[in-house]
Amino acid sequence: MNLLELLRLAVSRLRTSRLRAALTMLGVVIGVASVVALVGVGQGTTSNITSRLASLGTNLLTISPTGGSTAKPLTLEDAAAVATIDGVAAVAPELQTSGTVAVGTQNETTSIVGTNAAYADVRAYDVWQGSFLTDPTVDSGLRVAVLGATTASNLNLDASAIGSTISINGLPFRVIGILQPKGGSGFNNPDDEVLVPLAAVSKYFVGGDTVRTIGVSVASGDRMTEVTNAITALLRSRHELAATATADFSVFNQTQLLDAASSISTTLTLLLGGIASISLVVGGIGIMNIMLVSVRERTREIGIRKAVGARGRDILAQFLIEALTLSLLGGVIGIVIGLGVSALIGQLAGWGFQFNPTTVAAAVLFSLAVGVVFGVWPARQAARLDPINALRYE
Amino acid sequence: MIPIGAAPAPPPIVALDRVSRTYAMDGVRVEALRDVSLAVAPGEFVAIIGPSGSGKSTMMNIIGCLDRPSAGAYRLAGMPVAELSDDGLARLRSRTIGFVFQSYNLLPRTTALENVATPLLYQGVGRRERTKRATAALERLGLGDRLHHEPNQLSGGQQQRVAVARAIVTDPALILADEPTGNLDTASGRDVLAVLRELHSTGRTIVLITHNAEVATAATRQVHIRDGQLTDGWMAA
Image (tube, rainbow over all chains, first blue to last red; front, side):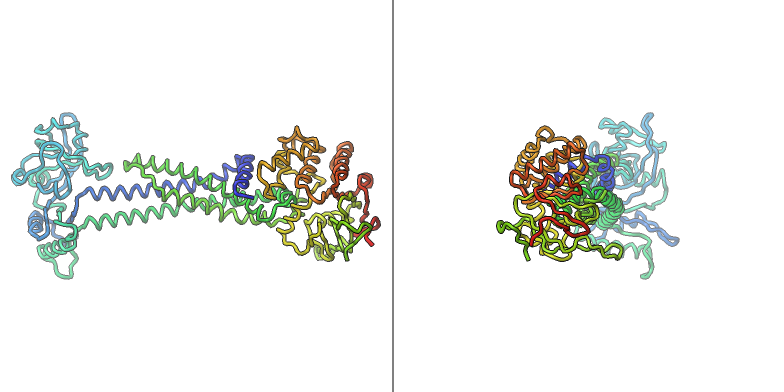
């Protein structure tokens, strides 16, 4: 018997018991759908993290304080010292606070970042309208502001707003520029911020010369490690740390961050996929259960088939193909549902939908494997039936 | 020792030579068949008659290659059955024997046409050819208008005629009918026996197994079985 004949038999058999076939498939459908959906969501998260980190800036090192009772804060002097290190292209100290920005009746709570003119280079921002902070405005602590793309649109501000006045925490600031969007969204959106001169933040909102982070742009990618080591050595000596003491700051290499983030995300994806495949196994057991019942119910049919010339392997193939048809059909339906769900989640979370042929191929193979693994045993039971007893079976 | 019989040639379709079959049931040995020898020549219509428990079902299973003898030799159409594997038996059944059972044994939820075509399926005959031959077999049995009926849409007599069509569709050397009239009313039973006689008249070899002496009169030769032994009839020397 060739495969086509067997498929025809299996399909006509499944059509005579549609409800049972549908319920049996449901287990595999749910299993495959959850594997595909969760892996899709995991991969979406990974690529989202990766692209967002890439948009933070090229060759970026971020120095942040790690805290502790004896820790010394990072200061503007630290930033100035770092700027003198060989291989450092630009340094942008950042002092971040949150504040309410108001224009007319519009109100928006967002992050206020005090920084300098190098920020645009270090963090890879482009100006859409107006101009960026300049060294003279930064040095004099003028009350000027550059708006992130999201902040500007939240406040209904467009190109005509350049030169107008907005209020930050009650104080008037003049808008000098609006940034190009970077295309992030949701939590920690890089387009939702207001940039003002560092001195303005320390003068009006926070006080002191402490900075939250220092962004450092390194001249070239292959000098990242060298510059990281130089910064560490410099700041350790500036903070008068003993050779054995832990540093009270950390230097973040963005590439490391990216690697760490994507490895966490990959692990999570595997974990989610693993959990979801448990339900696939349960679905497979459902198929095995139904196939065993079916072999018992159809004992007489098997006897008749054997009497009219079916060999053991014909019966084996018939039942195996039936199980495979169930699992494969369930798998295909599951893939469609899973892709739909991951597309929906991607849409809601804002990272879009990526069709991943590897996942689909893996899901198809997996459901085939489920069919074989859980179909073989019942099929062997059927193939081994003794025709005499099978014919007599009521 | 091969039973030779009155007619020296051609060789017999069925040749049982001192065949025994013993079962172990709950540790007790039951001798269902004892030293049975029987030869059926091509073109014969033989009835094997015996009451229930006489061993006639065992006889039918052995002749039908559904079971193997415990002792003795059985050749079906010249093939020594003892030497065949399960798959070999299946192939031999498929090529050589057409079964007609008491309870019809049609595949449920399957049309008459597909039921009759099933033996051809296992012979690897193509779909078009299967349909053609199955249709011809059904038409020959007067069921040309019932091709797409399922068994539960057919009367008992019609179902048994579908089963006969299935038995002849492969053009087998032997038709083995086990109480073919047992589930039928008198008229339908007579009808099926008429079909068998008609098949015999066209040269087919038929072995009919029954407990009913009247049914057995349809055959040209009767063999009686009791307590696992042939008690009389036309035995090989």
